[in-house]
Length: 171
Ligand SMILES: Cc1cc2nc3c(=O)[nH]c(=O)nc-3n(C[C@H](O)[C@H](O)[C@H](O)COP(=O)(O)O)c2cc1C
Image (cartoon, rainbow, N blue to C red; front, side, top):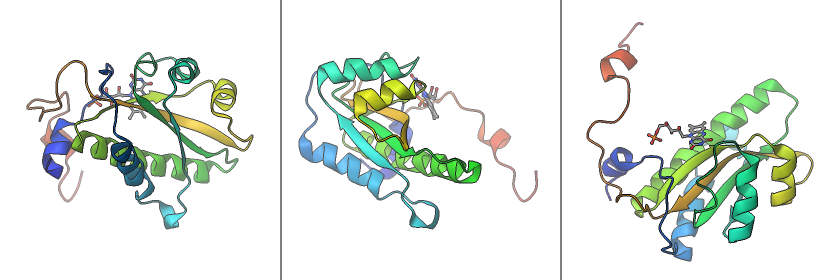
């Protein structure tokens, strides 16, 4: 798929077929995350990949809107440091966002859907993922081939019009 088509086709996919994700495809998706840019190249992320069905079920309990996680073929937990410094925390979250988009675009390029989930219960996340005390799980990215419809360019996305969003030269 062309990059532009991947951008047009990405959407949150929350129902997945049983079709396995080939290990090379999963590695490619993770590599896309690893290659994401970050502030001063500090790479504040670790990725925990979960594929076991029971563990996926337990993982879905760490977030209020993660009903799609148990049916995923794999879910990537994005893990970062539990920084006290607000600036570091904000920068790390920005960088994790960059990794997220790279992961999602690499997935759609392979015909694989992805869905975010915000994590709220850190104690449970630490238990399910075996994280050290100085780390926490910021987001989950569930993966799998879409069960609803294939990934195709979306003609009319639910987005504010370009002329509302873009300010040329000045606000
Ligand atoms: C930071 C962030 C957190 C999100 N958290 C959740 C979530 O917990 N559960 C969920 O189903 N979707 C979640 N989403 C997906 C958004 O609802 C979705 O991206 C948005 O509605 C636009 O839809 P689209 O991704 O299909 O274009 C999250 C997205 C972002 C960027």
